[in-house]
Image (cartoon, rainbow, N blue to C red; front, top):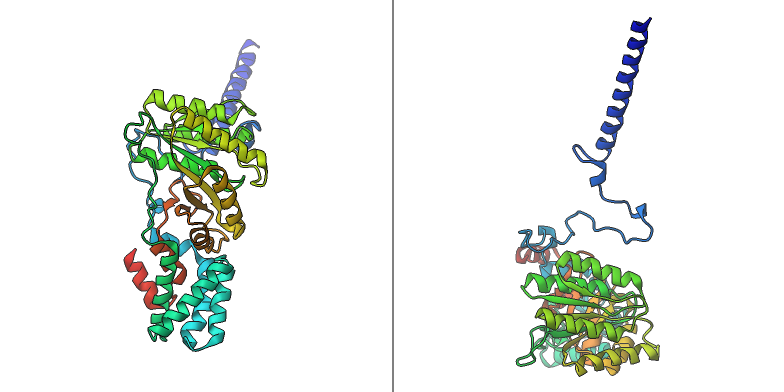
Length: 396
């Protein structure tokens, strides 16, 4: 009898052991061979109070010191190719108007009207569109240009003239001589334009150039903005200065400047709130941030206005408001890869005299690119003929 009991117990032990091994095997298999379930990436829903973790993909920013000096091949910025690929809508909109003029020649009145309508549809604006067409007509008549290539070359030249081909678009991120402190860059704009993401991408670019940025999370009205900036700080190795939600933004900027000075940092990037630009209190808040920084000896080298390229002519209104409040020195145009029609670049430069310095060409961390006027104009005027496409591919 005891032998039977022992045999039964032995069988039970074997069955239990086999069941445990099967469960472990299945859990390992669900997360990848040889990967413990604790090593998997948390699901977004694991903790509703936490922001989604960074994905391990080609767009994940390598931490400093990992030996990864270059972005993944597909993320390398090639302005001509990227502008061409991302400005499909602008090219299609202008293509109709330009095509009619090139086919029918400068003597066709309807063709000129089509060109002006195409410029308006591309968000170039009434004043700038009218001026461009009038100048182009006068030059075409004076130079007796009637062929397609000649007219295209004239339009290209006029667009580059409006954009300011010799405009200085460099960023003021080098400390001023004798200032004894970091360069300060204020990043302003309405909510939803991509300010915080722009700050993070700019911090990445500066870090890879060997500069030391400090990030001030002065958008204290949105907890998500502070959390997002903290993630960028972890990815780039930059110090992030922040306070609790609802704190005085100027106090955060003050602490950020003090931290940047103490660390001997090169650049202080200040991410500001972006409630509607029609709110007077927002503009007063931005003025206060600037006053506090200047009072503490902060050298404000840049005030970058982040505009959503899809907003069209509304971007001009925003640019005027922010320029009056804090003196915008340059524009960062985001979402140029989506439904944007691109002409706002021309309108801002022509009507406000504010240079577009950076553009967002996608969602990747390396998709913040210096604005290249020639690449931009060539992209929206590009002839879609096979010969041109071949030449463009060779250039890239």
